[in-house]
Length: 200
Image 1 (cartoon, rainbow, N blue to C red):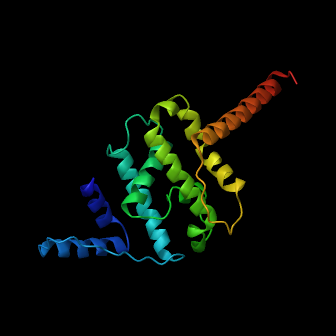
Image 2: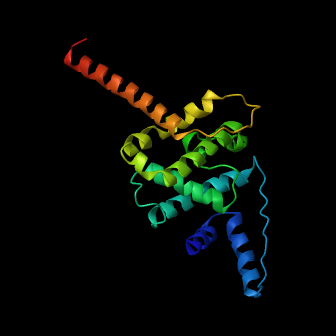
Image 3: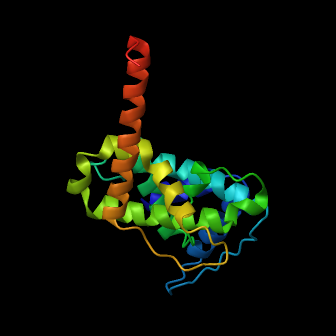
């Protein structure tokens, strides 16, 4: 996986190729001690756009190069797990998959409390997907279809902008929301079928 990370960072636009050159130069000196790198980024700046682009490319790489659990068939759920790998690797404060669900309208929105909370939801979702594969297999297609709606419901249920306390969703809550959304969809499908057949 390290080779995939290095290749991606070298090919990414902006700051990351420079960072790789610095890392390569350090490694060529033959330093045998542990080194701590501090990577500073300015929130609400062009760095967020670069990070978004890099995360999208890297998630695609992880998803396609066999680093994802084989039991996950849905590309959406595999991508959530890929973004969680990236979050851990780069020590990001939240799962950046939220940036693909609710697109930031402006640069300052990349780190809004709404997207941070949604990213924390996706961190929990990825942990559930990796830890509980059997209990989700039957519902995987529906979960993949509704996961963005479930995330929005989770964020909207506690919409106090000043409250930064994160209470992760439980598997039971997620499955309850999934059942509710599936029930609504089935009801709408039945209403459409009734309209088409004229049974209203």
